[in-house]
Amino acid sequence: MYDGAIGVKTGYTEAAGRCLVSAAERDNMTFIAVTLNDSDDWNTHMQMLDDAFASHYPKKALEKGQVIKNVTVDNKTYSFYAAEDFYIPMSKAEKIEINAEINVENDLKTPINKDEKVGYVALKYKGKEIGRVDVLSSDNIYGVSTIRMKNSFLECWKNIWSFFLL
Image (tube, rainbow, N blue to C red):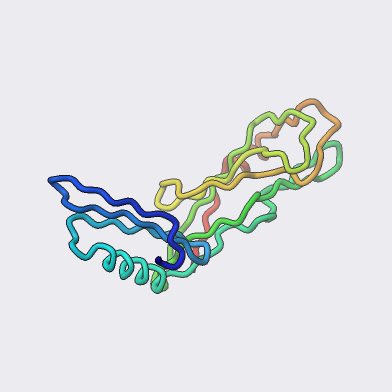
């Protein structure tokens, strides 16, 4: 068995011949290998996955608990934070730009419970979404019936920030 294997599927069609799809996960990275009409597909997949793991490393793009935004309600500041870590497999020879788009409702209804989802961060590479991380409230928020985001606050929430991963 392959170290880190999480799934495999064989198949056959007249046009493609023998087909194999396999996936493996290690160090917060998942790679998928696909071959068509390969007589030595099992060994080819092990080599493809070995090469992928050898030439990439996991780069943490978001950290669990990382504050995404602070909001003030009735003169008290509350934090909204990332619910989980998000890793990106990085080529050892590559520098890429990842965009993080914060999405939160315009009107948040209270009460908001501690650890309640208030939105999400969409991580994008070249304009395509590559993952999402929920945004949670760090505390219970009471005191008003609706938290109406001001225009400047909304611009921050809808804003996209970019960061380069090395």
